[in-house]
Length: 436
Ligand SMILES: *Cc1c(COP(=O)(O)O)cnc(C)c1O
Image 1 (cartoon, rainbow, N blue to C red):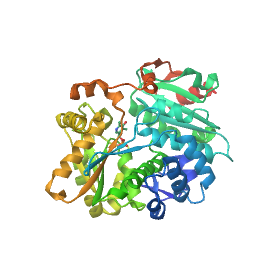
Image 2 (cartoon, rainbow, N blue to C red):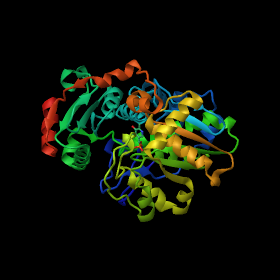
Image 3 (cartoon, helix red, strand yellow):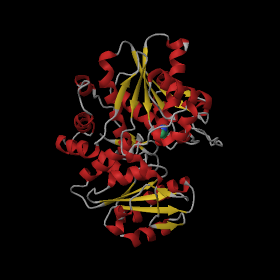
Image 4 (cartoon, rainbow, N blue to C red):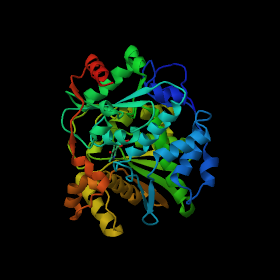
């Protein structure tokens, strides 16, 4: 598959180049330049197909010739010791649980695939360095995915504040492959520094630098696969229409779903579920997200004013505005409804979902109850965060304590970064040089 820029006119890039360079030279973000037809693959797969099998079959088809079936099998095996899980609640709703990865967040899926596929793509190349802006659990997810990957070093830029969950024996000076650096500034400063680093050709070419943030199209493509997985698990029991409800922050997850649809998955729509910080109305009317002040909520991963994937979303709307209006249903959910959704899913189905997933569940119920959708529609709600990450919020909503699985305990352990620097390119170069 070839990739194009959302903005600039420039030659198409191969998957390998798009993944290893990450950003088009003249601006914009990489998006698939072709519409693939994957129907033949996922129509014959069924509920007994495992996730690694699906990845090993669909990835080579998506990446035509750039990833052969043997490489794809290696990628699938080494990336996915965990699987998504489809839980059918009743004839109206299912949950797609994406929290079985090492850090309990759906982002594990994209990051694990990206790290494994980069190792594979670098087989006949020199080493590469991955620089990413991280906060919360993303750093741990990266540390996990890039641990002991040949030819890869992962530099993680954290904003001011404590860093949790890393194991110092995995740091580069101690023979590992990660370099955690704290930036005196905010997460936005870290993101800006990542962009500047990749755009600074001498610097990025010296180390062969790319990023594992969602600007990297390899992460997005990996997320297409769990939508297909949900579809093959449920297709036999589908009576009518099918939709997905996606809790949206930076819109990476939603965009991956849109690609799954473009590549042939028969789905009738996507609910873009947001909390009260929704900026979608302005986007639909004016074609861009305008900065607004954020209110903090019980679903903090959705508290975003300018989504980093807005250019990719816009490119869908530019291609076919009328189709997109029938395909995407933006819904804003308030705090009380989020709590009520957690309570309802617990009482009715005996399942605890986290507040981000609850935003999506509440939005799904709202749409399902609305007159327009009185016909039969089955909605798959994406569960993006493990309940253990939001134990207090959940306790307030349903009055129960969530069990914390052993693997998620590391998040309480604070670690020191290898360097603390100003948000400047030369400081970053200096810090990296002193570590390797
Ligand atoms: C990152 C995150 C989201 C938002 O996903 P996007 O792809 O940015 O829209 C939703 N829920 C949780 C738990 C997250 O960590």
